[in-house]
Image (cartoon, rainbow, N blue to C red; front, side, top):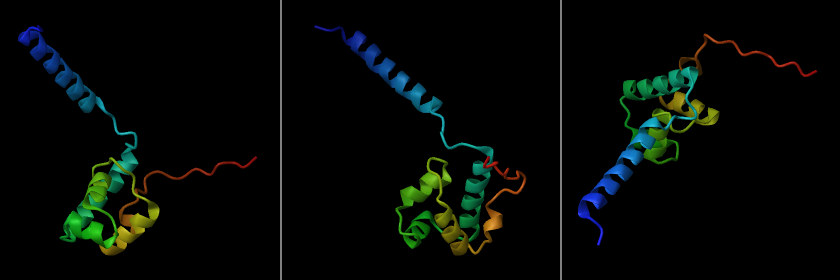
Length: 108
């Protein structure tokens, strides 16, 4: 028979490992410029007085989809960004940071 204290310690260890993994999970899509975009998306939605459920319905998605975008767990597609900008009555420039210039890649 297994000692109940030993079983408890194993369960506690598993929980601690799971918690550590969850806390250290980095967002693969994190980038300061992208953070700017999703912050602006969230702010624009709230400023417009719209709930995630309403917006998600308007773009044909689930609320969890929009939540993942706003939390940085999913990237927003450029066409969705245009649709959201229109829904929030904002120009696309409102969402896209202007402080970093795109560099042209030589084709040679």
